[in-house]
Image 1 (cartoon, rainbow, N blue to C red):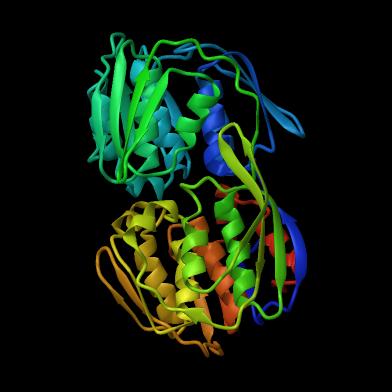
Image 2: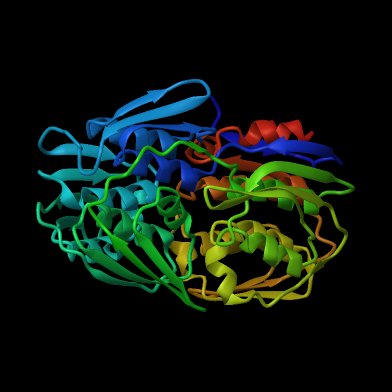
Amino acid sequence: MKNYVKITKPIGSFNKNLEIEGDKSLSIRWALIASQATGKSKSFNLLKSEDVLDTLNCLKKLGIKVKIFKHRCEIISKGLNSFIYKKNILLNAGNSGTLSRLLLGLLVHSKSKIKIKGDKSLSKRDFLRVTKPLNKFGANFNTNKGRLPIIIDGTTLPKPIKYFENKGSAQCKSSVMLASLNTKGITSIKAKKSRDHTELLFKSLNLPIKINKKKNYDFIKISGKKKIRPLNYRIPSDISSSAFFIVLTALSKNSKLKIKNVNINPTRIGILKILNMMGVKTKIKNMKIYKGEKIADLYVKSIKSFKAINCPAKLNSTAIDEFLLIFLIAAKADGISYFRKLSELNQKESPRLIWGSKILNKMGIRTILTKDSIKIYGNPNLKIKKKIVINNFLKDHRVFMSSVVAALSFGGKWKIFDKNSINTSFPSFLDKIKSLGAKLN
């Protein structure tokens, strides 16, 4: 079967309603926290992507009972640090940075050595940012020059730590938070602003967590060794997945879209704020609070002109997975857009800042790229008529999906690899694109 799609003409006008699968970050966090609860936890609308399935498979190898049904998933655990496994087991995290980094936090207390590996893309990513703070709990890590594979040798007497997270990485912060669950005493974290899904889940479970929010940092204290009750959770729809359709709608002609029950956590809606600055008005309706998370229906429609911006760096962490899409809006903006302090983009599945520039250049858009910034010279009249091939990007699912949005928005004859990469986070992406009327070959 071919592992690419061909797109030879832009998408036509549409007026549709969509429902998007469960949030990937919350699906993985639910599973990991449920593995430390006492009793049976249930989830509904769990995203059944490769990253989430890899999470469940790792938990099974660690002795946790996992049952997957058509409309729900169940995890049965005996509580904190109740993993049962053979010596020197190997866990495969696949492509998931969230799984691999957060799982290391739970394994700080492992009774024997455990090896974690990942695919080619994940094995290029930095893990010292996680192993250094986790080492302070008392665990030892043997890494491949700071990368996977990693062998972890846990400690039976973990010590609470003080940790300063200065990168705005929710994965690093959450890894330490999970390690603190089974550590007697109070673990203190000073964290640069980032996604707060883990904090909200801790609160929903009434775990002893205290959060003091300041302008640039959150101060978190967690008291460990507390029994965790089962976590029953209906996973809201993923805003990162929704973003592809928001941008496609904005760039298309005479189109409207409603996306139902989307997680609009304030730490995740940077893309809505940035797009608003660029002229894309997204309406939020029917908002409600569920287990601390804000959920709402999103409405968006196409517009004819876009504004160039000097993007505030303070919004970076709240839109870190959506910048490839934001760059596409900048490509059609009137003027020069400037995005800075984005080195974290190159710590993703592929060096996304570099790939964002490459895609724009292939489209005929001029860019100026540094190690942590990009200037994009927009062309309001952009229409592509040439052939474009997108490949060799470490099978990054967001590079693939963003390229599909670009092809359907600007025209040209595109051949985009690797189609199978969407299984990492959004297996139904192409089906939903087709449901809007797109023609794919």
